[in-house]
Image (cartoon, rainbow, N blue to C red; front, side):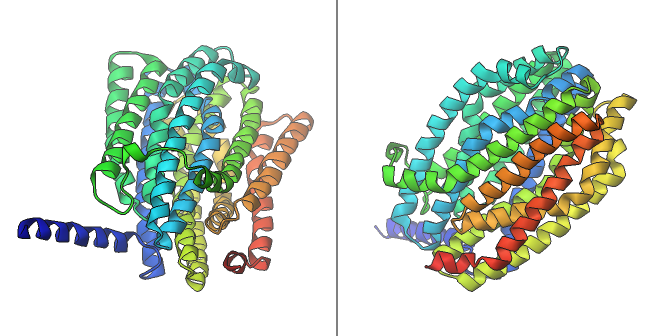
Length: 463
């Protein structure tokens, strides 16, 4: 009995240590936000690296048309995945709020409801992705030389999308309770697996874009399994019990109320980017390949942005749940400043080395020219993108996810699409399309800074 009692005491102490490490409501603000953001940054870095390896292997071992096929698929993937991904962000806000308030019963209900939603979302995405990919790619005006491989890649990707969704579900649960380390570990493992399988399937077996798709699906499946194994086997305040997975309707309503605006925002941005991609497609396969290569590099510019935006959402959610209003404001200011600085430094690096980076994907001078032109047009404006995403993350954590949804709808969809549609008919030059991004980032930043300074979002939450 004494041995069992000692064992239970040790497990309790370990659980308490995990809780204190994960809580964002205590400890130095800069340290909590930075230590939370860094594993997300590194995890996204590994994810971006294996996305880049996909394109590097395909571009160098299969050819520029295959590179264009993989590249042209990104906007469509984000369109279909973005809606559900945003809802998982909303679920994370709900979980982090209850976790910060130490309402562990509702934390458990929120987690198991989120998992149930993830399973259904994965099944729906599989059906939509496999069934609609050819039609949407044709609507986007994907070049005929690229179309067959694009359809093949997308159908393989979406046939395994349930694994992607479930990994994101597990990762969202970890991050909501302040644990960004475990998602990093699983991404490192899946990244290594993806790189190895890419080289085997594409470079050795010569399976082309199908090999790249299969490598991605298999590696994501491994990361999802590892995530749920950890959540279900370790005794924590947020442990998953598979028998408890079900829809709790009041909790689902909260999750959807928080998440649908974020999901619609993602879909809105993806729709606008599909319109932009459709206009890029009219300039031919070389433009698609060059801009696709740039988009892979741009992913590195997004690393500090997505990392600190997610960190701010969790930080604000937990601190407002714990009624730490002054701490929430101080954390918001720190997160915005550090994110802007890091994003601009990455943007400057890409600006200076763009031709070298693009040439790694394909050495064709025309491909390098298109990719470098886009980089030189947009990268120096990354600080605006960082600011907009940080404010959006803060507002989501405060439960005001409708505000960033409307700002993005107007600035990043309606105005961006209108600009591209009208201006390209007057000035048929591809650089005109590239300017759509910095111009709309500027507009959203102006709107956000006015709202952030004038609206007392913390006081509104307290009421």
